[in-house]
Amino acid sequence: MKEIRNINILAIESSCDETAAAVVNNGREVLSNVISSQIELHKLYGGVVPEIASRKHIEKINQVIEEALEEADMTLDDIDAIGVTYGPGLVGALLVGVAEAKAIAYAKKLPLVGVHHIEGHISANYIEHPSLEPPFLCLVVSGGHTHLVCVKEYGEYEILGRTRDDAAGEAYDKVARAIGLGYPGGPKIDRLAKEGNPDAVKFPRAHIEGAPYDFSFSGLKSAVLNYINGCQMKGQTYNPADIAASFQKAVVDVLVENSMNAAAEFDMNKFAIAGGVASNSALREGMKEACQERGIEFYYPSPIYCTDNAAMIGTAAYYEYLAGTRHGWDLNAVPNLKLGER
Ligand code: KG4
Ligand code: ZN
Image (cartoon, rainbow, N blue to C red; front, top):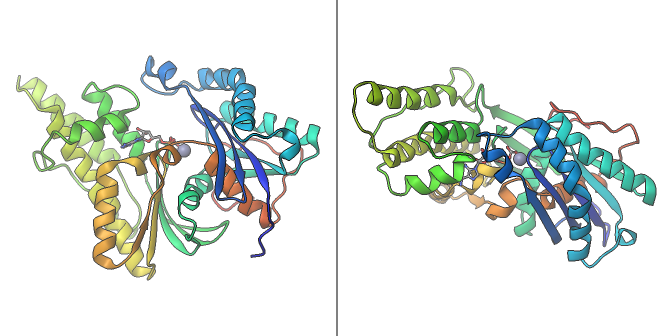
């Protein structure tokens, strides 16, 4: 693919509970990455409240964009294109970013490039790994998604497997709530699990007949909840750290096993992880070890590029821009946007 020099993209991300803007140069150099998190607000309710998220995005978005430009030492005159997440996600939250991106693109007569949120997560791996190029396999694990994806080319994806029910991050959040850790549960379980025994309780690992790369976490989540209820009914105490460690081991085991089976079947020697759960220490360790054993190059983003951010959207938007993707003034939020659709 011909590289066009010095393209600065202003990227906007507002699909869930982070209002984020970034300036990315030539797809791989992050000049600024500003994230305004709403976690403290949603914590009060134990999860993301969509209407509150939209309202907060509209309050914060101009400020976040201004900070991103300042940090990059740029004005809108230095920007060559606007990239924005237009799906999947919460519709009201997405609309804020999309309307903002369209307004700036319209006022400054700039090209508008809509980006798929998962394409953004996958592209986060390009930021710190300059040599990473497709083809590779990527496991996307976040609060809303669990996808095993073959990245055939920039912007060209084949979904090999996905969750049939809960996303991995969702299971973390629900189990964390059950053991009284609060929202978001992923990082808290990660921390608590370090003090527990991963073999203390044998929780189930789901395998789906005829779909070797699909996942299912709702049975595991129920098994954890049943275990806790059982202990409470019998008046027995349980060790939350052991539950966290045993639950985490069950999640990581299936994620690693399905990933390595896919790498073998598709004869792929590059494997990346992405999304909020990709910052999980047990998953990183498990994947690193499994990849090492098989001679597979393993890639993962720094935690700041794992959870929602706009730098990853800027990177994805750059490759879409090079491929000629341009969206019109009719660009809309698409809450259930499919990966690979334009
Ligand atoms: O990618 P992300 O910010 O948002 C979505 O697109 O969903 O992912 C958020 C999810 C939450 O479920 C959170 O609990 C989980 O990522 N998460 C983690 C860790 N850090 C964040 N899960 C496990 N271990 C972590 N260290
Ligand atoms: Zn995300």
